Image (cartoon, rainbow, N blue to C red; front, top):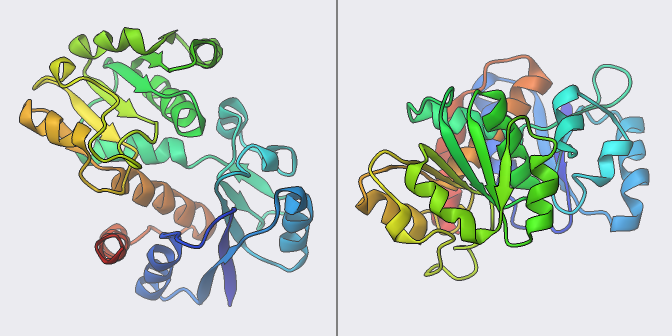
Length: 269
């Protein structure tokens, strides 16, 4: 039996275990998916120990995505983003990947949104924002990064090809954009909040909100009211997991099975 898992702190409410275990059952893979919650100071020992114990792969979440970068051999994309969220122990030296980027591009593709040549705005310059900005730029979009702390937006734009940056006062760029990604937590802790004024939303806009609790945020409701395409955060969560599953197993993921398991648990939560 293969063991996969998630390392983070906290991980108690993670939706990854039911999603991945549904995939193992559907594909007949003899595997389990478990969670690990080491202290911040123990992440080095945790990764070394996982490798020594023969764990096949780990997902990595807050606060360890940047910490593990120096503990594995990152692939080129993870190195550029500066964060690892998936580790494969199967090829000798542990290899680090960032499947959040694939979660973004796959989510737009799933909804029929063309990214090549698109004008995109990313709100937020943290981990999710970094993955989104690189993913969109690599797919051929022109990216503008808007962030509360302008210096962080500027730093990210300096390493994303062709990107521009500014503060939240530059969100009016959304008026002329084709694609918008909310990579902040706005709308999660206070469901009536939105990172983007409704007056900037329009019918030619596709919006991915990384927030998945609630599944329908104010941003998505107002985008729908404006006639735009809405993509909830569960799609990004699902499709980054799909990418990890396929990296680990070499098997096409049962996407619909994983999606059903994820959304069942979201409705329970």
